Picture (tube, rainbow, N blue to C red):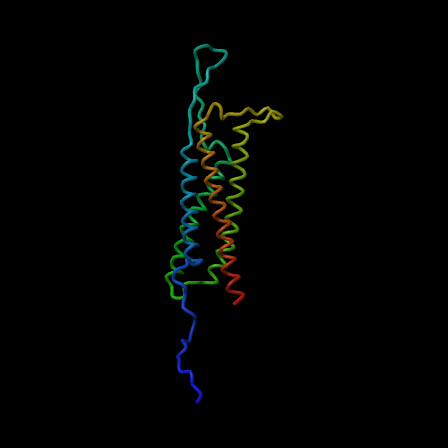
Length: 194
């Protein structure tokens, strides 16, 4: 006698693995990290101000107060504006990512495509701002003997420490944007290959 298989096989998509973290959750986490690093970087740069008294060599007993602050350099202004834009973008895109996660199905190919384009654009802007500020900062730390630009960080140590920390935080923001691009491209490639 032959046996007939009477087991019922479920129809529809296979059940999702509840133990793993999906790309959407990682995307939201990276956007939060971008927000935090960009915001702290902007705050540190904007609060970098130091005043120092320098004696006037020709007049004994007379000193001049010189102030070092971020808005005296166009590269630092560009840096603050670029990271402020990154901070705002991370809030908007993070909220959109959360809404997509809450939606049934939890993915939006069109939104991910837009995120890839905007993430790449913002990555370029943040990397350029970091490079410009880093170049000015390097001249401040080391000077340039060929052009007779003297280093100023031995006189304005607190100011230089602030912008060095800010540039380091912007490096983390830049790496975070690169990871967001890779994550979005990976998620899109998985959808295309289906």
